[in-house]
Amino acid sequence: MSGEGTMAGSVTARDESKGRPFGFMAPEGETAMVCEQDAAARGKIVSALKSMGYAVVEATSCGEAVKFMRFQIFSVIVVNEHFDTVTGGINNILLNLEGLSMSIRRQTFVVLLSATLPTMDNLEAYHKSVNLIMNRREIGEVEKILRQAMAEHEDFYRVFKEKIRK
Image (cartoon, rainbow, N blue to C red; front, side, top):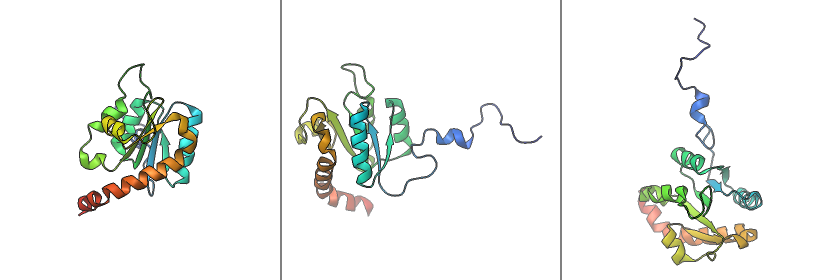
């Protein structure tokens, strides 16, 4: 037997890496996932995150995003409120994030892109279980808004994160 073939149903290394957002190689530093179907908006978000030093992966569907989250704890997740949902439907990415344990969820900064909600509305962000709401009309200022909101978030959770590390 040459050993070149595989048995039916066996899993190859290539198959195992398919669901991993960065393959088998874990990126150094911070990671981000962008869930936005509009190419122009997605491009601005990805560009801003990369300039901030993040390794970025772009999910093409809700299923793919959830699969990526099984293998990677992202530092930042940016998700459009209507990403891969039917009109009036529930966003399964946000639903999945709500189900995470608090120690895992607090490691991720979640940004909700909305066509109707105002940017940096903390009460609405709390209601939606996200860290930041960004109105789509302000997508041109995405890096500035992210930097400000993330700095505030870091200040707010600094003591909490220090206690978790101990």
